[in-house]
Image (cartoon, rainbow, N blue to C red):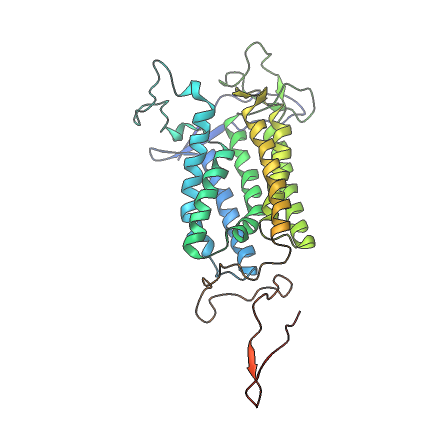
Length: 333
């Protein structure tokens, strides 16, 4: 196993150092810490979503079946979004746009270049298809996923730290981030010991706090029918819009805003719409995590939900009186 340094470390007091390495080798195969951070996030999201989904009454590990579609489509969506929002890097004279065996092509995902908002769009399509496949209600899955998703995004941000990328404006704050002066992302014309806002750390802390807020709010207000996911969009979009405004990496501009600022604000709007519309459409609680007629079969296939999670909205069974007339039993509230 051979470690490959990015460059020599900088000695600066009272600051956050960047890692000296961003990958290691197992034989001839390079293993990037960025990829390991993303994988760690996926694993954390799957485990927490499985726990929350089974507590709602779903079959244990049905989340795996949904993720078989959601994760690959999320990666594809993340790459497409990045390419479309950075066209100058992939289209133009002298660029190997479509050659999958050449660096700089749209297929060279191993060189980096994925976007969270694209992952959300592609992953949502995959999750919808996976829910149709398994019979799980889409909004039930989205609500179960919300805190795990924002934790996954927090873990993924450590990959930016290892790569020394997507940092913020220069700062003299004591928690400024050190970036190697020979890093391609280091702004020209600045002193080698210049410190930068650690936007990766800001987002990590914001996301972890958000996970706690989402879990507590969902429990306190019994947010169902997609409203937990709506709260996630509002929380994540608000923080991302703030941190994005102090980043100095190149970005396309839409209506005077960086692409990801516009996407983050759109996420907040979508989250608010989900919260309002779903509250009006579904004032009660979900009767089951499954779509009607798609419940898991077999003894022990489904764990019992917590008593406060659902309200029985099915028709009460009819009983026959001794003289043959039908009377209805009462419904226990």
